[in-house]
Length: 165
Image (cartoon, rainbow, N blue to C red; front, side):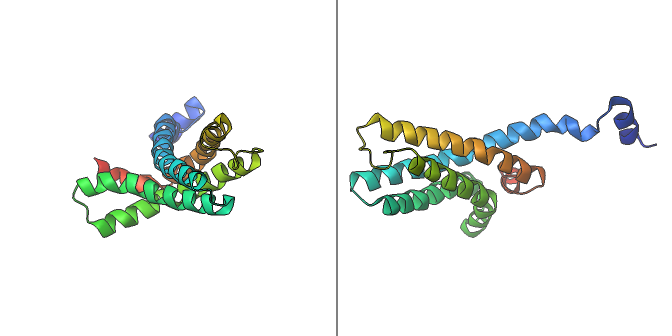
């Protein structure tokens, strides 16, 4: 019996379980990193759309577009600082962030629409800011297990981690 199987038999788990906390931590920070970029774009889009009196659909479209722009930019900036070419950095950002940003954007905009009056509240009303904060928190919580699953399979943010060292 090889050592790993022997250890699994004796301790009731395999040696991969030891990597689990590291995967959890990596997924947490990847989700927080992605959420940061999304939040900047989402908040900016919601503020611009609400401030200009755009329709709910136009405001959401602007917020989603800006969330993707800032989400990708937050991943690309450190890659570009390491000397990676713009095209390669863009490919890595697309691979790392697309699923996470898409999930966060669907969830946070569904939450905003589901909270009565949130999309119609002015920038001066606590309802607007409270709903937006809650929506982003829920989006991050929903995206975490997806990011964890992707990273555990060498996908998502795992594709950029080698370039950060």
